[in-house]
Each structure stands twice: as structure tokens, then as C-alpha cells.
Length: 388
Image (cartoon, rainbow, N blue to C red; front, side, top):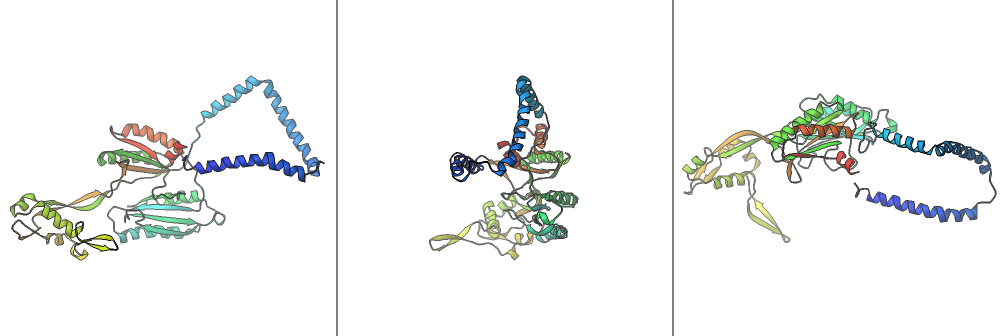
């Protein structure tokens, strides 16, 4: 944050220096040339007021200087007493910028049409609000273009044209959409500096070696945050349950017919992933790989996969059916890292609860649930608040 506000500090410092030079050099010289030595009507009108203020200041200052020791002790007493006041602290208060956003997460593996059917009714509710000017729906808005993620940008009417504040609207729709089934919905402000990530004020990064442990720890933390009054929109970036097909090679069967594991892997890779280049194309000094794979209509089902053939040691073609086994499993949608470690990010927003109070609660809870060898840190507004 020091780097961020560096230009601001230089501007303020330059302004102070310039204003000092103007006050001690420019203003007196201009005043000597333009102003008269005689008192004006403004002087006679304001002088009694200024004298009354000066007289009141002197009458206030006399007892304070008379009892100097008592004044100093009272001053330090008020200072110490003020430190005991429980005043909450946030990084930046929410401003009414006439906009907010709704992020929506559906089940991992959902198709585009089903996701549209779930998101459009929410957008229709927004369009019926008289305080909203327009809304824009984006499905697959992140860098990975995840179909199960959507975001609705909501532009409000100018402040003068509506009677409801931005914060009130955010809390209204947060309450209205918290019971929507099969969707994780968060209603939050739009960040002034869009980094493509979450804008939630509370961000806790859990780091460690095994996702199973991180999953269990993040679940406990989320349950704690959900049970804490004043904390809303609790979520995390870890998503499991992505449908996938796992292929295992039956090594004994492959060895019996003279087919190597390498040949089977090469056939599957060439047919579906097109990772291996068979040639290259050169244009204007640039070289492009030429790869080959099956057309989409020849790789839509397991039956297409079973029909693939591979050469054995005798040069004969053998069908893959009987050489490989299929297993329906659920995998992780993405693997995220922080400082080259596996991580899960837990996020939340606050309502009527200051951010520093939430941090104290989280730190106390992490002492109970964090396993040995795993650690955590705060990012987002909490990190910025600590830096400043």
C-alpha cells in the first residue's frame, strides 16, 4: 500500500511546499500593492466577533494553565480511557457507486443450457426492480471459463433518482437469495480495482500438502463463520465433484496379446488430446505444429473408445476393448496454489460486524482446527488494513 500511495504522498508534500511559498511571498506582495491601509466595512463588521472569540479562548485557557498538572493528568486519562473503547475497524467503508454484483456457482459439471435456466430467473427478478437501471449476465466469466460459474453485474440508477441506498439493496437481495436451491450465491460490491478475483473483505488462505486435510479444515472454518452472527456469503474456491472417466490399463491382458502400455497410451493420446505433433508448418519464419485427432462425432461415447485398435508386437491390430477398464469417478475442478503450495481460499462478507473483530474470531478458531504442518494467512482487505 505504501507503493500504491507513493504518488499521492508526493502530491500532498509538493502542495504544502508550494502553498507555503505562496503564503510567505506571493500573498504579502500582492496585498501590499492592491490593499489599502485603511480599515474597510468588513473589518468593522467582523472585528467584534473575532474579539469575542479571542476573549472566550483566553478565559478557557487561563484555568487550564493555572492547574497545569491536573490538565495533563486529565488529558492522559481521557487518552487511556479511549483505548478501552471497542470501536470496530474496516479497511475502506462501502461507497454508493450505484453498482453491485451477484456471483453464482452451480454444481460442478453442469451444462451451459441448465446453467442458463438457473441464472435467468434471478436476472428477471433484478429487471423488475425500479432502482436498477440494467443488469448484465456473464456465464463462464473467469479465466478458466467455468460453465458452472456466473456473474450478474447490476447497474443502479443515480443516487438522486432512487430512494434506496446501494448497501440496503445488497442486503435485500442477499436475504432474498440465500434460500435458492442448488446454487451458491454471493451479493457483493464491485471492487474499485477489478483484479478478476473475489471482492469479499474477509479472505483466509489455508495452505498445506494434502487437499483432503485442507478440505476438512476449510469446511470446519466455513461452518464456524456461518454460525457467527454478522458474517454472510461464506464460500471457498475449492470445488470437488467434477464428473470424470478414469481409464486403467489391464496389464495382464495387454501382455498376453503382446501390446505395450506405451502403445495404448499413445493411441489414446493421439485420438483424444492431439498432444503429439506429426509434422509442422512454416510461415514467415514461424513454425506451427500439425497434430491429428478424431473428429468430435467419433469421440462422444465409450463405445467409440472401445473400437480403437492398437498394434501388437507382431504388427497385428488388437481392439482396446478388454485391454482397458473404465471407472466413473468424481475429481477436483481445479488445483490452486499460493506461494507454490496447495491452498484453499475461504471468503466471507460482514454485516454490522467490523473486520478487525472477525479477524480476532478467526485467529482464535484457527488455533483449534489447524493441523500441524499446515498454516494460513489473510489476504484482501485484512492484509491491506494490516499494511496500512
